[in-house]
Image 1 (cartoon, rainbow, N blue to C red):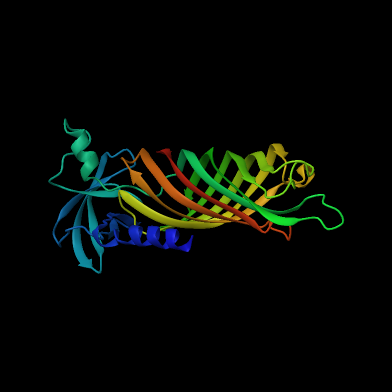
Image 2: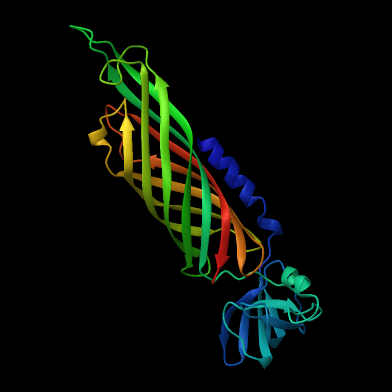
Length: 295
């Protein structure tokens, strides 16, 4: 499991050196401080500032450049934190080459983001069972597994320049099965062991953006509550299938198409807090992908 996570993290971090950023991080008294990481900006350059609609709203002139930061004065228009920069040689979105402008402008990250995501879930549960052999019942641990699916809606709110608060709500299916060695399932009458639960889920996470660029890798950690809507099992006591809790680690990438839409992808590993002596293993991994909008 750790190998999967470490491989994905290394994959994401590998893009660090080719990433770029360019936006206003401070504005006061007709002067702005710019994040120009990865941008070819020099003293004397005149740049456009673009608002959330990719419209040119100001012209600035760079007066100082140091350590991936730039100081500029506003020559015309109005500046605000979060506005992206565009070199004066590029076409604006108001011209006939609007698609060229969107490609050259810098992606904003201060917007509220909502995404609908599909989930491919890999679930595994191990449960200790025993048959009704008298006077010494046969004991065993039955492994049950299955690949399931779900859907969720996520909302991301930028707390500051890198920290993002995430909330989610969704539906998940847990449908797993395994075969026992003895007749220890279904009230000790069958070797067929299974668990079938449909959950309503709600989660809260803290997310950290590794790189702010069109290709935006991130990591997150948090927790999820799962409320059973329907439940059925031959391996577990159905009365004991109540609210489930997990701690989760997520790694992912948002691919920003523009300042209005993006494509999210992620890998999730959930650690259950509902394990017990009779249910020693509860594991879940998930791959997600979807479509998001920014406001």
